[in-house]
Length: 274
Image (cartoon, rainbow, N blue to C red; front, side, top):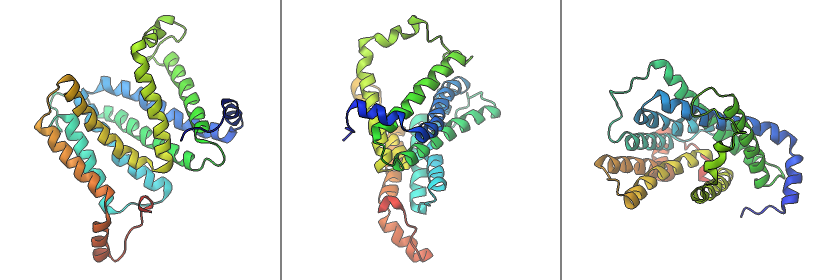
């Protein structure tokens, strides 16, 4: 599935991918800024507010996807995405979407908007580059993107004045925790996740990726309950019900498209149904 030839051939393709290297600089830069803003926003907001607002990326990714590819989705799918966002927000908020202890001033919400925007742009741009890859294999795309990501993360670490983000890459003590053997399973899982994500974006799209991420949110919660004994609250079940309804609307629009046809006289074509 992921084999694209020998490493020697892959490296040669990497060095010959001039335009692609330039384009992936924007994608990797957006992902890097998304990660950095995650550290910044986690310090500006309480965890509950931060995680609830972050669920806006589902809707914003769909909007960016529609504008970038000029392929509008039906109203049914849009309602489904809104329900998925609401369900994820309820899950992260623990049953309350308002936290009176949040002391963040209004200007700080700009950083949340930037983080969500960078995430949506990076996901859609990555999808476009993967689907317009020409003769370059999937792994060559991954090499270009992650090379830029590593470089930019090192650069941010050197230059960033934010505590918890900035570091000295020449200090061996910084890298010592990475040698802990207990991290290797996590590293392997994350590497596999990156490969699967790139394949997912190529064969599906970035909106479905957000939908899959919402499912991951609940699977993680229930797995934590099974392994560590964390309680499952009534709000978790409510959030799951709302999200499931949203996914059902998003994934099975046939009945509602017929209703749309009767009401408005035409069916909006969605490439994900082809």
